[in-house]
Length: 167
Image (cartoon, rainbow, N blue to C red):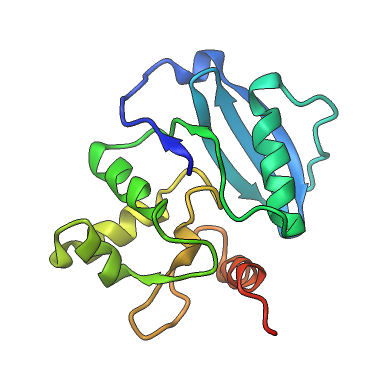
């Protein structure tokens, strides 16, 4: 399971490195430094895959490649997302949603100890800076609907189908 740091680092941009990695559902922009992965986002712009991958990001690219090939169900990366303490708590709880499973926003709120915080939890999910690795795509509506996904609902559907292929 990825290790999520809960401390705040203000100087991460000064020493961070970026790489671009082509995935089946868009180009991933990966940012990180010696303290861990800061963000993984999907972009729609046509950007070439990075020819040289910074050392701090190589393991992330490798694990994402294994995930997309269907060879990896868990990530083992040092994560260092930037956000509020509440957001980091929500993101940390997302790491407990197993591969191929889903949880509702209400269930997620209950896991965090406050079923009334459903909107705040949904908002924090939407601000998750580490796409796929912190699996906010596994959170769905109470009625089973695919609701809210910063990368687009078609990507959420693709990811869920990738993790739970039909027999």
